View 1: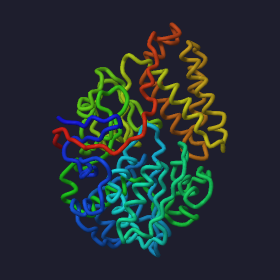
View 2 (view 1 turned 90 degrees about the vertical axis):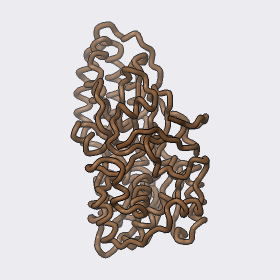
View 3 (view 1 turned 30 degrees about the horizontal axis):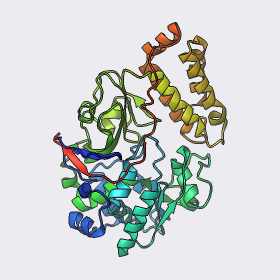
View 4 (view 1 turned 180 degrees about the horizontal axis):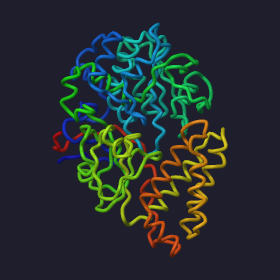
Length: 426
């Protein structure tokens, strides 16, 4: 097993790297290097693209894991107004999309152009909030003739600015906040017109699928979800980084390869994610996790060691999330600070805080202008279920005797680094 050593967040893989292939020398894969690796991009019709994504059972690599072929089918037959890469990656613990855009931007552009050409899109946009990723994408566009119509929309971001409708408003020149109507981009996207939008990894997967074809693409992963996925592995691990894994690899294999501390609690999906039951090792595919009542979410695997107070870690995250409100609706403006206050009272041993917490998480769910209050309530509710013994200790004794080590605190942004592999086979 070999890994790189770097002051930045490293990249490594379990098995053969595909999405990160070619980045072993560090830096960005150039256009000639990309073509030597993958060849020329095939020209696909809309029917070709839908058949390809259906055969490969391709699921989106954003939070929802929605089937790509269904998203394509929802767009009007007369043509699509826009195709947009959501490269905001506002999840604080995630670095995978930035890693892709910085190191293998041409694979992202291949997927973007495959969709834009097949769907006859009038506008093609990459919305990216990381300056170095924006520079890499812009440089890649300049390297190739077929990408000249792509516009890069770069601006600072906050957590809710990564939500699909917020990205649409921002790319259209408006404020990067959700507009409050729960509409899909396929119905009301960029400039209020039908749009195909997905995150950077999804477009890279489409590009890879277009090059490989469905059968070669499916020689990794599991039958219910072929291919590979990127994870951001963080927290109480000796080898944090962006990790490419075959879909279906057991969580325990990833934790062992990353050097997680024995007995660590594991959060899947990021700040809107869910905690894994103690000792569980589900296969990391979206269908299997959904069956287990878990979520792949933003592709985050975060470990919290037994030496840290898990409730303190949860309060730190909930406090940050409450501060990321767009300030548009009561569930965010009033509900999220109340949840933070309830959690703080629980940690201090106030049983009333525990009962208020249950009430407030129920009140915010399903009532926000976007999914942010729902995500916070889901994360907090999962935390209460996972750390029941810790809650009892705090309510009985006013504390658990452990410090808060900040293992769910965001780490520095990634930089392009070498990819190396371990030897797990699917």
